[in-house]
Length: 138
Image (cartoon, rainbow, N blue to C red; front, side, top):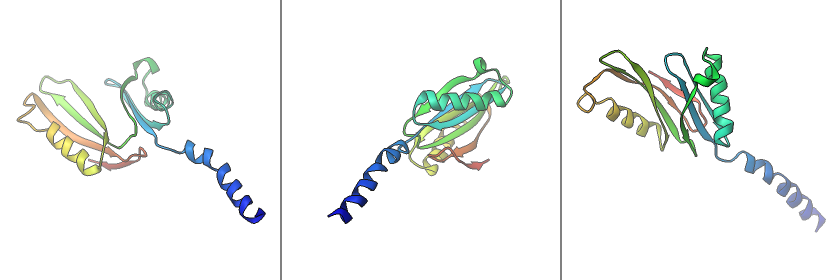
């Protein structure tokens, strides 16, 4: 009986550690015309704090790093660069997508010149997997 009890006890002690490694969300911040950041975390506060730190490392002030997106679970994410014909440019981030392919389809739809004729440039610049790893730079 003891031979069975010890493995069961040891396995149950590891469950809290496994629960801590559960689903993570992803956060994005932008400091317009300056910097940006992306991070994953268990909570919005945890992920946004890490994304803001990354944005600051890129040269922006923390107060300029605006929270733009949070998805939980994170799913796949895309980052699109867009520029208006009058000059301003920005990044559009979509997260929580089911696959890289879905992200590429969403980017294609968002960059359709018939739908957004005022853009002189629109391109998918990055795809992130559910862990926040950059998959593709375009």
